[in-house]
Image (tube, rainbow, N blue to C red; front, side):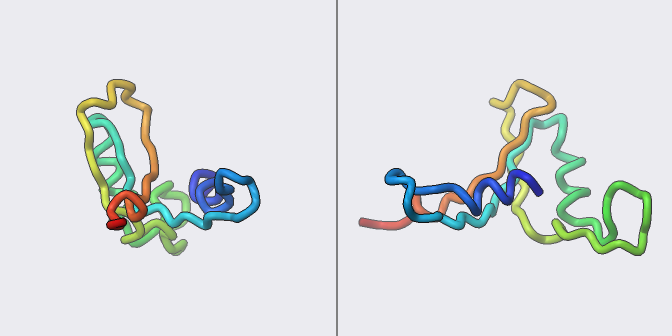
Length: 87
């Protein structure tokens, strides 16, 4: 939740406009790939404490596994929309 909030509240280069970036991709090392799919596809909260609690991350991200991430605990959220816009 903190990473999502940080992306939404990120400021532009003049520090005036809030960019309100919506994360689309969850990028993980191969060691976290199955965990990432569980988080993104589970109907209930994945902590297992209460199966009646809805998982707010279900269907929210596209999982991308990247072998170049060498830290088995590393992960990141990305939105590539601006990179795909044509000028």
